[in-house]
Amino acid sequence: MSTLTSYNPIDRNPVGEVSVTEPTDIPAVVLRAKNAQKSWSALSLDERQQKIVKAYDALAAVEDELTLLISKEMGKDFRRASYEVGGTIQNTAYFAQEIVQALQTEVIGRSGEIQYRPLGVVAVISPWNYPLAMANNLLLPALIAGNTVVLKPSEETPLVADLFVNTLNTVLPENVLQIAHGDAETGKALVNANINMVAFTGSQAAGKQIMASAASGLKRLVMELGGNDPLIVMASADIDRAVQFAVASSFENTGQMCTSTERVYVDERIADEFEQKVVALASRYQAGPWDQPKVNIGPIVNPKQHANVLAQLEDAHAKGAKFLLGQPHYDLPYIKPTVVTGITPDMTLEQNETFGPVVAISRFSHVSEAVERANASSYGLAAVVFGGAGANDVAEQMEAGMVAVNKGAGGLGPWVGAKQSGFGFHGTADGHRQFAQVRVVQK
Image 1 (cartoon, rainbow, N blue to C red):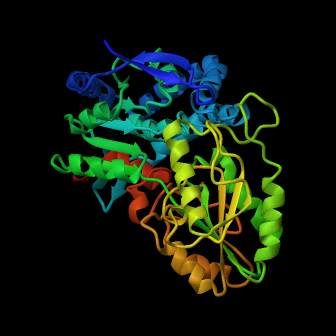
Image 2: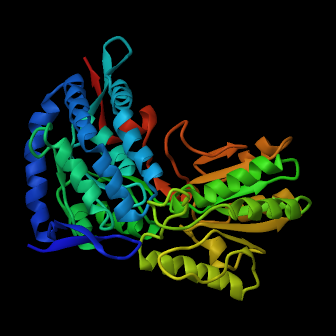
């Protein structure tokens, strides 16, 4: 049996290893899930909720270990890793109750019902940047809805997922939740297997492959496919608040976050002051190992992603962008806090998702220019506008699934993307119901 090794992004030393689920093993995994689903779906919503909550209570015993593994596997600083683990554990009871409420049978007319029934087997394919939270956001509604789940975690963070699933399985019935470790071939085999739904968070390219593979079986899909999120700063904005948001959002989780601010469009009348204050604040950030107390920018997850960020920075430099902080090249494994201005539409820094700690700034003379450039992307996950009068009107023009004015987008409603940033969505009652089959019954 082959193994998958997890590497520390700081020094590329092994953290640990797990057994690979070969593509040829996937049909047997799915068959076990289908057999387990019969008895799991026979339980009531309340009974499934109780078992789930009890299983998540068991995570408290491994909370510190999960936190440490997140830091070791993807480089997230210990404080942020602890927030991810603690939030996942502490919010489960509320999250589970919200899902149960969303899936209650609804009475229609005099004798009709809308029922939310299980779909069957759900494949959850989760990313490395929030290895616990993102997997949890997809598998929890799937399980409570009465489905069984096969989790395929990222190859970058297999140890986090393995401990998570194994701990839950000390309580859950056998084969209700299984894990399949491996590379893209394992993921492809899972999508092609006799499953009923794929819930995926990852890249556009992988999402398109999943859609194509799922088409022949008309498998249900919920997919979050990243973002290239714009921020528009109007002349009427509170500059200090806009600066704080621009830097914090660009640098959060080392910029390795789908709702990171990737493109900043600032009114030329305030641009000099805005840029000076961005540089002053960004200069206070420090890159380094996750276990150092003053560090708030960790390593890039792997050499391939590090090279992707450098390629964008070098392209911008070659096309005339000005580096106000940082430089176009950094040695592995870090990208230090970087502020670049003079970004133009032909630069890959504007066109593509960066996933690194970079504040990329452009100036505009009229807000209509900023809106046009902000919307000129295949992505449409989140968009933010900072400004006074007229900011709401500008926000209305943004082509994104989540839009906010003078604050970060996301968190209040479903996690939803527009254009090629999403297909389906999760979170809140409507999102939870996407993990169920709607059935109308007339009695």
